[in-house]
Image 1 (tube, rainbow, N blue to C red):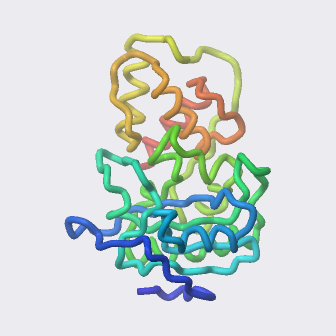
Image 2 (spheres, rainbow, N blue to C red; image 1 turned 90 degrees about the horizontal axis):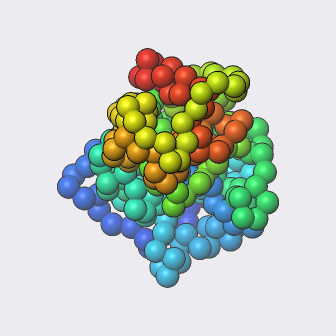
Length: 246
């Protein structure tokens, strides 16, 4: 199955298997390649030794390469979770977006590339009835382990094209905040809200390292102007807005 948005080319990856447990596709995960070029990324994703793959890769010129049929389980999410589900690969479609990433010179995603990401994503979510809040960053489902596609991906633009969940983030200002080392009911409430939204976090009432990592992942997606792992008023207010609009 390719869908109505045809790829420009195909490069079959050997790193696939059947979706486990007859899982229905309900999640779309966006990644960046984190490599010097799209061709290097394609070559790596199509090597058996890599043990990774994706359904589609979109280069900076907007060219789409399909590597895995949508009916099959691609190995793109790795160890991950969302709303208590840990086998994200069996429930998802994975799109890799060419970008060198944080380690090699992270840069803005070209508008043409973002336009094609939006078009392909819209096609996928429409055919599979994927909820807006289930269009996710790799960092959402694997906080700390992954940071892609990062804070430069234009989620606001994607939302304007009918892709993903988004609210205008609260402006950054002063006021109270929660950070690593804090504890108490406000921390418990924050953790509970993040878990309810879908993040893999156990509410304990203690703002530990895991909580900081999840806050960073949340900020990369929804409050991109400052990614620091501190639950300031802007971060908390943005989370409240999202929860009111699920």
